[in-house]
Image (tube, rainbow over all chains, first blue to last red; front, top):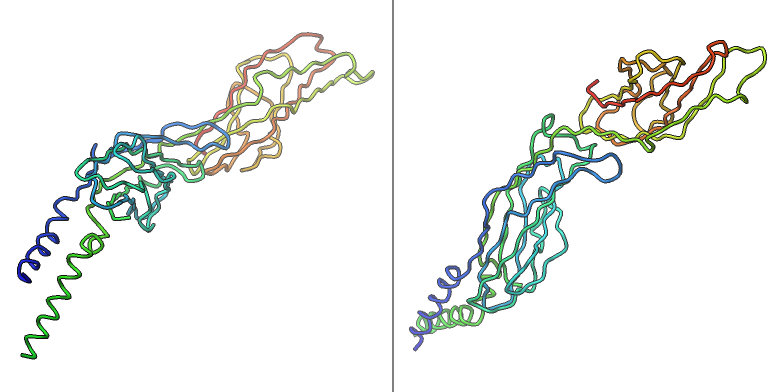
Amino acid sequence: MRTELFIIAVLLTWALPAAAQLRVQGGNVTISITAGIPGPIPPSATVSTTGLRWRQETVDTKITISTICPGQKFTLRAVATGITGGGTPAPEVTLQEGMPATDFIVDIPPRKPNNGRCTVQYTAVATFEQGNSLELGDDLHTITYTLVAQ
Amino acid sequence: MKLQANLFSSASAFLAISILCPSRALAQTFDADAHTVQVSVLPISVVSLSSGTVNLDMSLGLITPGQDQMTVTDQSTTLTWGTNSSASKITASTSLAAPLFDLRIVAVNPTQGAASPEFSLTTTAQDLLLNLGRSSGSCLLHYTGVALASQGSGSDLHVITFTVQAQ
């Protein structure tokens, strides 16, 4: 009996990672800020070509976001829109080099094996004072989304 | 016998943790994925004016007996700019190649950079503001129309162009 329980436990431990999935869809993204207007509103550009797809688990989960961007010069924000399968978008996240993983979608209900989806809206903002890429170079973010138990 | 008891105890503990807390043990992270986002900012320089028209009217009230030169001024227009290039200036020029009267301009109270001394507008662009750097700012435009009574009457129509350019 003890031997059987041990085998079950091992199977559970190995099965869960295989069942859990989170995928970024749409590939890498380039956002170009090309125009602005004089005044208090800084130049910006928005792109919504990225999607997230995840498998709902047996427990409440959430998705966090983090970035690695050495020498970051410009502002980049992200927010989840059009969530299907349950879950609540967190307020728009400002992505900064060195930031801890921050809530992106919370309260994803346990409805395994259903899938959830959303669109990621990125907004890049560069004030006039922050300069341009010709003089300073581009920002390159490696953005990681993580599906974790809530 | 004692050794067997210890092993049993260890196995029991392992089973209890594995079965009762499988999700917590992975909390934890179920999965992760990443991609790259590249942010590119082009050089952007923009300028705008608060008003499209300025009228300088030399009326009879401006004439002083015994004095040939008359002047009239206007400071009702605000110039606003934004530039993300490190070395920028703003120039001004007029479309009118042969004006009857002299029209002068100077930037007043710029929030960034330094104003050039007052100058007469010509078709050649002249520096109005220098050393703007990467900035967003504004200034007032102070126009002065100068006419001589001896020149008689008439009117000039200037289309004045302000340009942000590399310094």
